[in-house]
Length: 375
Image (cartoon, rainbow, N blue to C red; front, side, top):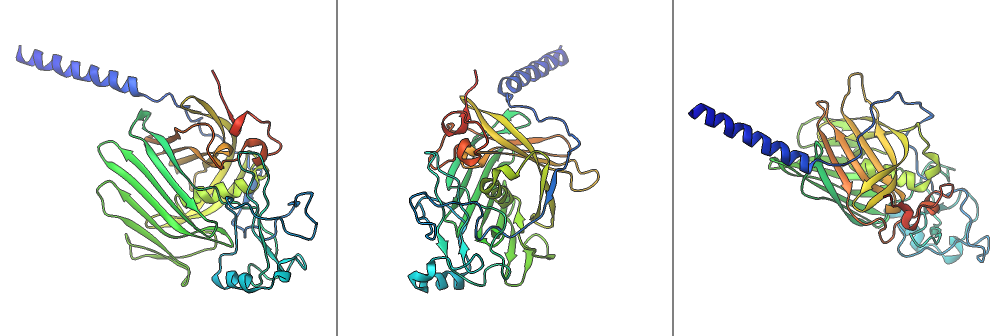
């Protein structure tokens, strides 16, 4: 009888656990199965635009004058100290463009949620970028913000996570906090500056639960990447990212030119982890609706393609124009099928965000902030 009683208790506990899991299981959209990507273009790291093309000043402004910069905008600006001093010391007359190859202009941030288009400040400087080069890929740093996310582990909701992102156009800081059951809080921190290739990490820090920190150092003076986890050092290529600055580099590129990222377009990023570095191919999947509390938000889906034969680890990112192209959803799928997900839990519009029609003029408007509500 004692064994029968023990068996009944065990069965009852299993039933209670199954009910709890079912009650808390996420209603998130499942990821679509792996597909054979149709590659439209393969994009490699490039210098970001110094003199943006197709940027017309307001009609009331003379053609030879640079439009004024809106104070709240985050734009790509000159980041080398000597170049900034050169701009500050230059006479006012020199701030007006003399030729396309003698000036450097910060990239234009898309309009804010009010729908007003704003151009960036023009600055005259020499020695930035390749000799004679005045253009590159369009690039615009996302607005600063503290975003809250619902977190899920294999579909089961956990405590909320956060992404803290701040940038003044010259420097940036990003801190991602994800609580995991039975393990503790995973924290990923990246800080650095903005250079001719965009987001440029100086240091990346991982802290997983109670484990010691792992630090990746981007030594730009020696062009080396160093790690505290291993004595190995790697060459530091232009445009190199860490695991989370890569998301903001992608967001800045898409924010600068949304129309360039059509389904099938794949951009390569060199990404350093806490002990190694490799090329990440990130493919544009397309525009999708991401379910959030109270409705849906439109976002563009990007997926990391397999890095080598047999690579089953997958990373999916959804960037939302109504959030200034900040992430609306992130999912990491481990080789064993385990999924860790962050899904934005805020309202459908945030101060300083971009609307769909301003970030992508060809896209139809779905209402305020580019968000749509579905029954």
